[in-house]
Every structure is written in C-alpha cells, then in structure tokens.
Length: 350
Ligand code: 2P0
Image 1: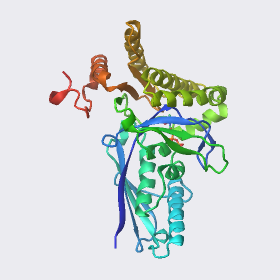
Image 2: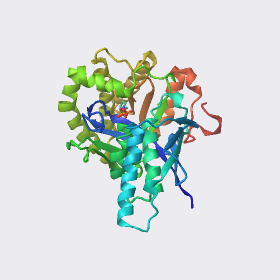
Image 3: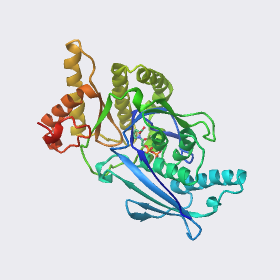
Image 4: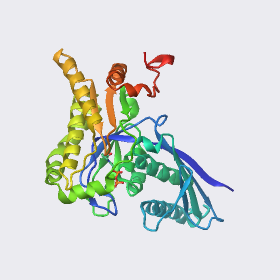
C-alpha cells in the first residue's frame, strides 16, 4: 500500500500588510492582514508527501535539493502538528492505518524561479500542510489548516484559500483564533487581476522574519499603525471587496503599501525594500490614475510592494492591456513578460 498525496497551493499578495509578531514561536501577528490569492495556474508550489513504515526519519526536498529538518524548526512544527491531527483521527477510528507513526518524505517545487524574488514561503508552507492533510485524510477545514500553516510562515495561512482572504490576528495567547478566513471567493470578482513586475531578481537584503522583528522593537510608527490604522482599513477593504468597489480597494491598497514601507524606514537601522525602479513604477501608476480621475474617470490601478523591489499592480481586466503597454513603454526590458490571459494574442506585445 502506497500512502502518498500531491497538492498545489498558490502565492498570495497582501493589500493590508502583515508586518510584526507578538509571539515569534507561534507566529502571532501584531495586526490582521488581507490578501488576494493568485490563480493556481500561474504561481504555485506543488508538494508531494509520502508516509512509509520503512522510512527512518522525516525528510524534505525543496526544488530537488534536500534540506535538513532541524528540531523545533518551523517545518518540524508543521509536521508534528499534522501528525497530531492524524493521531486524533486514528484514536477515533481504530481501523485506520497508523500513518501518524510513520516518518514522511516531502518534496516541494515552485513553478516560478525562486530567484524571481517572489515570496515562496507562503505557497510552500500552505502546500506542505495541505499535502499532509490530504495524505492523512483529515476532515479539517482550510481555516483549521491555516492555524498550522501560520506556524510555518505567517503569510502562508492566507494561501489556504483562493480569492480574497483575511488573516485575523486573534487575541488568544495560544493562537487558536489567529487564522485565515475567506472574505470573498475568486468567482465573486473575476475581473480583478494582478500584474507582477519583476524589478530585480536579487535575493533581498533583510529577511521578512528578522526585519519585522526589528521593526517591532524599534518603530514608534508601527505602534500607531497597529492601533489606529489597520483595524479601520481591514473593515473598509473587506467592504470594498464585497461591493466590488475598485476605487476604495485601490486607494487603501496603495496607502497600506506606503505605510508598510514607511514603517520599514522607521526601523533602526532603516530597512529599504524598494529601489529607484520601484519608485518610478509608483509615479507611473499615480500619473496614470490622475489622468483618468481628472477626466472624471475611476482609479484604474493600485500598486503594492512587499519585502522587496518588485511591483504588483492590481487592476480590473478591462485596463490590464493598457497598463502592460504603459509599463513596457517606460521600462523596455519588461518586453519579456508572461501573458497568461492572452491579452496580446499570439504575437505578444504589439
Ligand atoms: C504580507 N509580508 O502580508 C507581508 C507584506 C512581507 C510584506 O508576510 O516570519 O514571510 O515567515 O511569518 O510570512 C512576509 O512575511 O514572515 C510577509 P514569517 P513572512 O504578505
């Protein structure tokens, strides 16, 4: 009998940013966050888990290279937690094979270059937890699994759902209410698109984990943000998603990206994630929106930046082609872009 499962999980991009932990072991955040999960066809991690009585230890391969699973590491915690859920199921159903007592081999790969500077920990830990849940045939909901994926990497908890997802910070010291919930499904707002502009594929200078901890320890602005800014933004952006109000969604998304980078700058020593090209893309989006609004039209695009220089531009499908043409015009190296929706036909950019 072969006990094996393969699943995929997509990348998510936050419009209300997670930045700061109140508990570094359980990965409990200092504020709630909200993201859009990208379509699984484009950027995803695919993970196979296998349990076998002949295995002598748990082992992990990332993109074909074996990684050591250190005791008490985030990966070890996720595997232990998943085995605990399986053991509970076996206790209730004595006929079930005792998979919780076997070691596992886990192999994960991304369908995007890790060097593209796109966060792979979110899709990676979400896929790891989902593959073990499938292998163990657990009846757990995505929100229940998000409690475990969160302990792999905070943002991973949001990749358990497609569409629009909130990570509620919760208040319990044991983390039992710090989980992901669906705000709206992908089908609710299918016109929403995310354009990913790879500005640099260098490895980032300051990791999110250490950067956000330094921010918690040194930034006064972060304290203001978590108390007085994020709670209201969470409500407004959830409402904007539910009513498909792109104007409000875009305004808050850009404000929150700006504030996240302001908080990084307010850290000691300061952290700079954006570079000159990132800032030039912001100017382009601001100008593009200004021309539309001055003519009585809507806001058409929203930029957002994570812990690196790459831009993500949210837009509605009707404007995607126009924005790509603009980016390619001002940043000619952007000629090599992927066009998964066939907006430009077979010949690429005209
Ligand atoms: C986010 N980021 O909400 C924010 C915006 C980066 C900027 O979540 O320490 O890799 O593993 O919990 O999840 C990056 O943080 O950090 C992140 P850990 P994670 O998407």
